Picture 1: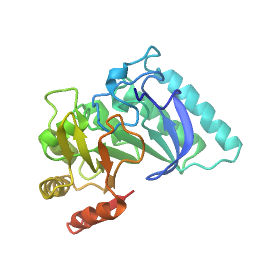
Picture 2: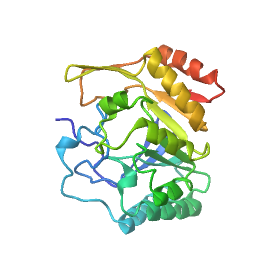
Picture 3: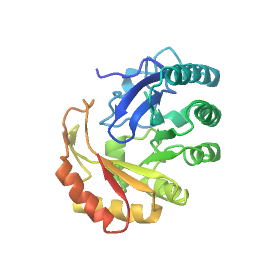
Length: 258
């Protein structure tokens, strides 16, 4: 079984194809996965692996470990582009997420004031006021929308909550007033005998309509880059991603293909 990638709270720096030199922050367990999605393509594996035994790191632990790492990097003269919240699950599930973001902003300002803070979120918690408020404090509020059609989204992302729909999340994303980046995984394949494809004309048209409502700072289009727990998925090549991007750009929306 494919399992989690990150076995520490602070990891890297690593090179991100979308963000540059990135220091990672994992607010999930270091030996298991806690997520409100169970995506077919998740590099950390399926939720069935379990949450492990380490639990979620405390706010104090995150602050201490992050400060130690930033201080050592500064002393060593190392460069850094971004501090990124990702890891082994959904970062906004952490009960002290807002406090962790507050601490991270303060530490960033102390050690690397020019560095950006990014949060990669699956958008399932943006209906909560404290999460939305915290996300407005980061430089790159990167929120997921893999399909504007609920049935396709459920097939790809497999949300834990049966109440989560594309229609609701599009409305919530639009509520950021353009202060967000929307990230969309483009793929094809199958799962349990069902076709998986968000590249059809219907899917792309629905995404374009959603982006027009959301009016994000940017749309990030990408495809599979690493091993996926569902092995019957197919990477969409860069040329096709660019063709899809041109359709979106025609509506005046900035698109990054990676």
